[in-house]
Amino acid sequence: MKQNNRPSSCGCSSARPPVPCGKPPREECRPPVPCRGGYLMQRIFASGRLHRRQGCYALCLDQLPCQAQPPFTVLEVCACGMPQWEELPCRNRQSLLLQVRVPLQVRLRDGCGQTYMVSSAIVEELPLRYECPPNDCWRGQPYVQAAVRLACRPQPCGADCPCDTPLEVLIEGYILAPCTVGCLDRPACPPSLPWYPQPMFDPYQS
Image 1: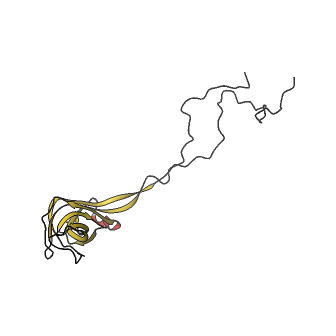
Image 2: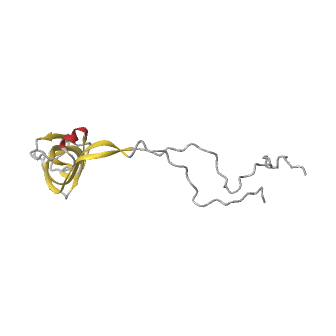
Image 3: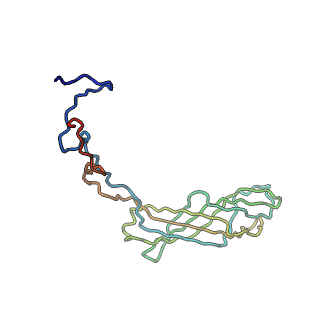
C-alpha cells in the first residue's frame, strides 16, 4: 500500500513525523528570558513636616496696580512656584533646620470692586529629622514642597500696611538620594510550565 504524500488542501504535507510516545508536544527551544534585576528608588535620609491650620500672616502685596483703590480684600491665596530654602544653624544634632520662603499668588478685590492678581510670599522654619547617620546625608538632595490656602475670609486692609491674612500652610521637606533595590546578578528565570498537564494523544497512532 502506497503512502499518500500529496499536499492537502490546506497547503501543508499530510505526512508528519510521529510524536514520541508518552511525551507531550512542545514548542521550539527558546533562549531563557533573563529576569529583571535591580531598579532605582528614592531613599529618604531626612524628613520634616509643618502644618499650620490657621496662622496669621502679614502679606506684602507686590506689583499692585496704580489704578487699584483701597481698601483691599483678599479673595484667594495659593502657592506659586517652587519654594526657596536655606540652611540655618541648628543646636539639635539629629535635625537639619531650613528657612523656607514660599512664593504666593494672591487674588484680591479693591474698593471699586475690581479684582487683581498680585504676588507675595511667606517665610517659615522647617526642621528635618535625620533617619540615618548625619554623615550619610551629604549624598542626598533636599526637596521641599508647599501648599497654601485661605483659612477664612480676612478683613479689608489698606495699601500702606501689610494685609493680615489667616492662612492654612502645609510644608513638607525631604533629603532624597537614589539607591538600587533588588539583585542585579539574579540568574535567568526557568522556562515556564503549563498550568495543567497536556493530554497524551498521538493522532498518527490511532
